[in-house]
Amino acid sequence: MSTLLVVIGVGLLVVGAQLLVNGATSIAAAFGLSDLVIGLTVVAIGTSLPELATVVIAVRKGEVDIAVGNIVGSNIFNIGAVLGITAVIAPSGIEVAPGAVGFDIPIMIAVALVLLPVAFTGLAIARWEGGVFVVFYAAYLGYLVLDATDHDALEPFGAAMLWFVIPITAFWLVLLAAHEGRKRLAGSLRR
Image 1: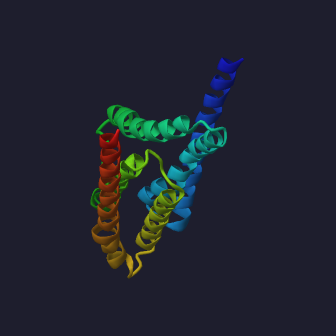
Image 2 (image 1 turned 90 degrees about the vertical axis):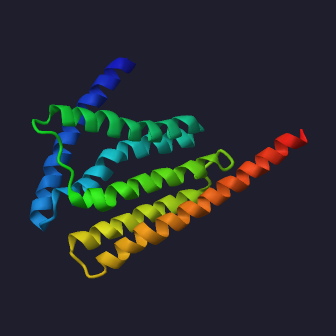
Image 3 (image 1 turned 30 degrees about the vertical axis):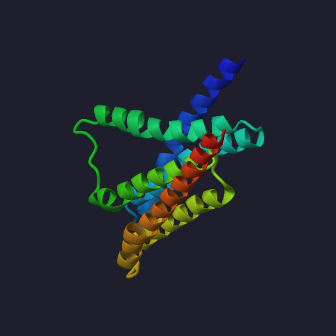
């Protein structure tokens, strides 16, 4: 019975993905937005909602390892397998937009690197640290809206994100991780 439910779920996921891509493309055309912006917002959120539901249910049931494993595993799978298989299937590979190379990918790498010290401090992600990630995402969405509307505030906002907010946060979290490491070392020396 469980296998049948998994097969039905995967089938519905494929149908839902097709509807999502068609709907997102229609939205992009109606509002004059680029496919990159729609992919980074509507499609990304839509495809991540099942993961969010899974993680929330896992956390509520006390299965924190499933939650963390799902998030990290999904990111590795998306970059390694989904992007890799898509590039293999595409006749001439996948063209990466200059805007993605200049801003989106560095932000993705920075946020992933910020996760390292957060995960190692107390081997837990505190609520306030989760709040920092939510604020990062809200700021990133703000950047995408400014970019899509070609707003005058885009350049200073993007520069502030790339060269101030992310590095300062990363530096602060590295210091926090170093403090945690010293605390653990001192604790192990006392034993």
